[in-house]
Length: 131
Image (cartoon, rainbow, N blue to C red):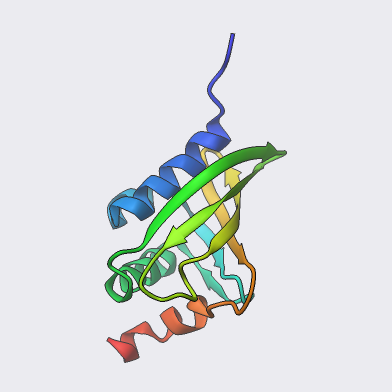
């Protein structure tokens, strides 16, 4: 018999919230002290900061979409492989993601890509000045 994996479910819910551009659903997926790490190593900390950064990002990239090809669970982490589509070619790439899950929510989310990374955390951390 197969059992649902809470860690994979948490990662799938996070990716579905990204694809729906649903900030309320995203907030429900994250721990209060979650951390987002972009492919350049920049960080955004806290649920409200991550949700606000995602909201700003979706304004900059309204066509952003995630397609996950595989999910693998290693301990309390879910490793994902797939690709993103977006107008910005530095954002639309093959990607790897790592999500650390605590009590069914994402505590840490990191994205990796080949080539020149987009420094999203720094850009979005300054988002209020850009919008």
